[in-house]
Amino acid sequence: MSTATTTIPGLVSGTYAIDTAHTEIGFTVRHLMTKVRGTFQEFAGEIVVKDSLEESTAAVTVELASVHTRNEQRDGHLRSGDFFDAENSPKMTFASTALKSEGDDYILAGNLTIKDVTKPIEFAVEFLGVDQNAYGQTIIGFEASASISRKDWGIDFNVPLEGGKLLIGDKVEIHLDVQAALQV
Image 1: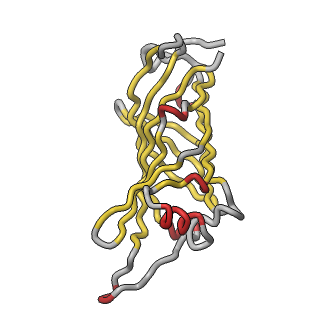
Image 2 (image 1 turned 30 degrees about the vertical axis):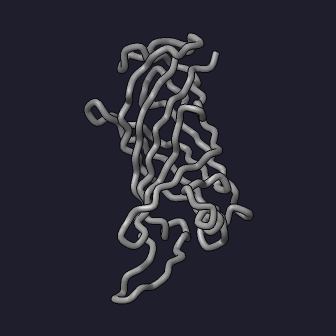
């Protein structure tokens, strides 16, 4: 049963399923003098909103083989053992451990697992609001971002270039645009 939470007008407690048709899980990484952007096409997750917002949780599972960068050759390389090793470690997961408010925004802490390596990560979250979709379901929306070092998860493939430079940057920017619907 859903009950109103006291911190965000219109937000009710309950389990919200991530709407994959209206959600994007993306990343950006430096490649030479530009940045490559990619998304994951297959994922699932839920957000459990509690009466005390700080007790709320989030969990997401991403199929690494679903990586999409608009270049099939690059996508194949990302699926390989040089990067995600999607054949042997097909899923990336995130499970939250804490949520704290910072003014109107939030910090969502949790554990990110890639290639059987689990490390803590923090997302800066902007809550976009509560509304009703065309089917009368209560929906929530938010954007979140984090920055990680891919080497922390054992993803350290690179190509050395002249002058001590590397082909691929270590820093990966993660971008989430999420819409989730309250389950009844």
